[in-house]
Length: 562
Image 1 (cartoon, rainbow, N blue to C red):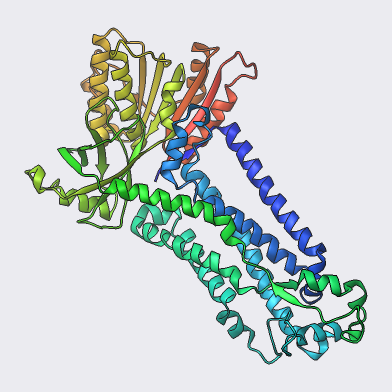
Image 2: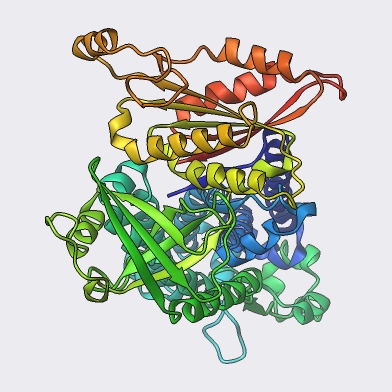
């Protein structure tokens, strides 16, 4: 699945703000439970683990509030549409994943702290606990008393008690759902068993229901405000034998903390419900398949139409085929241009679902099925991505590695249409396109697109607008012999393009140095789609060759990784 990353400076700023808020909430809550008079007696029994449990719970609520926002795709796409926040709104899946990171330590702290709390509640019922702790644990046995210790006797089985209370049951439910969601979200599972990832992710419903109910168990209890007014806690905690005997020491009254998790998550949950309603409305709109093409490289090309469908270059959609699975949705980058009267995707077999789709569309057969015989597809989207900002820069550098070339099909097509339209005013004046691939035959459909663009650019006299560089990394001795025997000065032997293919990997130092020299006072947008290792290299290059002088060259990095 696509994961869009912000430009480096803004990403760091947002990360610092987010970490700062987590730190503030943790410290503020911790100090409040350590100092608040209402919890003096609770702290006598539990010690500092009370504050550890509550501080981690506050941070969990905060991050659970944020976790649904990045997956509200329509909201993110709407924000992308506003130029003032186009960069900030490139949040998407990256931020969704980032919000999971602090959940790990906070979940661990919360669970461990409450396990210790349960044990300390239990020990407070023993004779060795001491007078005050025994006195506090004994409260609640008479009608006019309220209890502080939820473990009512020393003989109570604390394991059974923990697993039969509301807090215990929902705690286990939340933890199991969280562990399954996280473990099935690993790259290995997503790539090899996408269906497992997809289905287990829907346990988020169980997670949020459990989160909202969890606090109603009121495991943590404190002294009531009215009791604090009547009960002189400073004096009475040292003279607990005088309770009920003197006017300043009536029996303290306790009550459980009111649940607050719902206050944190109600807004994003309502927002997400609205998001699902919008998606459901979209699902009902008919999708008409107008063309099906099977490429010899094992790629299925689908052309579709849908009423009211509007896209931008570089966006993606989610596809569902109910005849294969009524629940599964898979993301695909759009390969058509916004100027075309249809939208298209190119699908390569990469799992059970895509293999089933190939079979359903008759791609494995010699003759295609009639269009009316094809299975029904449902489309959700389109949704925005970082590459939609290509047209905001005077100079854009598009870099693709392997299957990462797909998003740039739409970009390059749209560039062509805009160049041919005399009424379009383009900020973009120069495009550099780099394509690193092991075997170009796997993406022959894209090479055909480049050939078409190259021909049309020459016809329009725009030879210098688009510069592209293809690097072939997977070639052997037989290919080298073939290249040597069929060398042609006017045409590349491998791709059939005028621009010659380079063999090996690009020297990014040389490439970025040349870009900086060619455009010494420009803001250059760098757009990459491919593996993470190469992404790190490109990020370093953007930082290295950007000048401190605001009038000099600046590289702005944007990435899509799979």
